[in-house]
Length: 195
Image: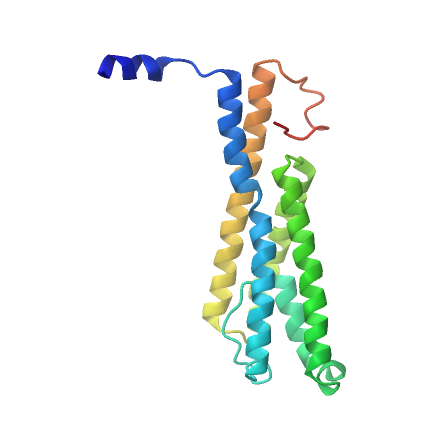
């Protein structure tokens, strides 16, 4: 039994086995922007509930999971008299539209990342990194709770780590294909990682 295990572990995996294992890992991690987009919609629901209880007007917003740009936009809109004097419906309609635009963009990039489009993977990581830089200033400037700020920072760190790992796996798949002479090294930047 032990001898069979050793022989099985010594067996060199084929290109297909290595590629499929790496591609499976890639798909798990590259779609993290999809979850960021979904959490932005969850944040929208939290903001609407907090707004209904008067937390936004009293600067008592506890936390949310949205993008830094969404958080900043929602809070700035609450300060503009046009949106607050026209009734809450205008404010909430505006933040629903803005949240859906941001979420749709993130989900679209996440889907493109899962398909192996390296430009979408890099664009998503860079945009989300820039968004992370908005979290602390917008939270401090607009008096968000410290707990809420650190929840958003932690979420951004996790999503960025998943994106970075997906980029590493992408290039491992490309190196694997080059090693087995499946693709030409000059062509690898033009094409996505496809199964």
